[in-house]
Length: 104
Image 1 (cartoon, rainbow, N blue to C red):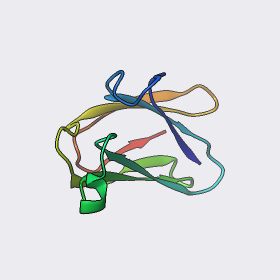
Image 2: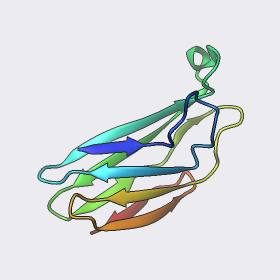
Image 3: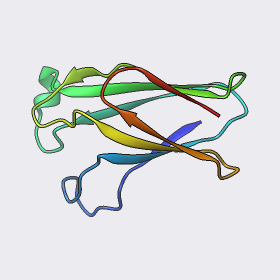
Image 4: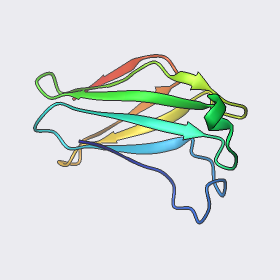
């Protein structure tokens, strides 16, 4: 499984979401799509949102963050991810919308 964690917030725009933790639980292949939109309107119904596909390949112990799809006004152009495994190993990844992989 790939489980994302954002900042502790009381409401969506309280803090920037520019640094997320991805907890990866190995044992099998897994995938996840990180969906984001403007938080406070219905523009997503008109296509104003993004999706970042993520996949874990258990045999190669590699997490791939795919190319971002979509866009919306005010979206983050880049962000950091900290990938954490249950044994405590972690790696940082800079992401700017282009496909990137991290191997453990």
